[in-house]
Image (cartoon, protein in one colour):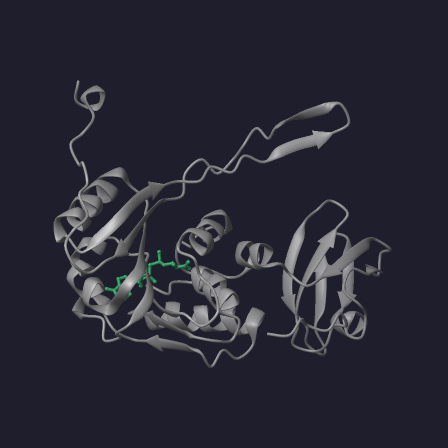
Length: 277
Ligand SMILES: C[S@@+](CC[C@H](N)C(=O)[O-])C[C@H]1O[C@@H](n2cnc3c(N)ncnc32)[C@H](O)[C@@H]1O
């Protein structure tokens, strides 16, 4: 996937940042304008200008124009579902080891946040198959994906209930953002290639507990890990250097497990004595 031109053109996604650090995502179109309390800027004035330039509103306020990073795009794009936040997308991309050439199945597509990260990692190669039952979510996700990535011929969206089965085989990664992933474990085990990785994203502890127990019971997965990420932003202004007063304290837990074939490796699943008392 080639780097984009530094010069903005019609249709490009642009992140506009004002001098109060307000961030606005827009798509350049002729006849359109950006508007805020600091004035207006016509999209035609951005077309032909370079990324990172400072332009002025009609009231003389500065605006920096940038191509949105993946994280900025996810946080400012339209969403009709809960999304997987960038901090968790980042962890998934590394811990589920997403790279070019893989075959990946995900459900549900939702607003497309995780799909954006996966498609970026696949870099135009391999294949992503997303299951999504709600057409209105699918349409929003398609707009979000097209807005950042353009056409993605290696992406297929299936309007199917994934609980009815996974048709794909020799899959390298299965990424599930669904309330009851344990219902899918037999299908995941059939779909995943040996060594393949399952990731489940779940918001509550009871879901994690039940899923991990069922993954263990299935007997075809190993290296089961559960993690969560807490990202604490910091305030740095003059001598005031401290954590921000507010942070996103909870999004979801991530379970990772790997498919193996053959005799199960020996694992000690008994809780430690200290955990039982
Ligand atoms: C929390 S959202 C997913 C968000 C998405 N991972 C993202 O990052 O934007 C859950 C999605 O799963 C879809 N869904 C729920 N059950 C499903 C099923 N059985 N098969 C396919 N999609 C399903 C819902 O319609 C919803 O869009």
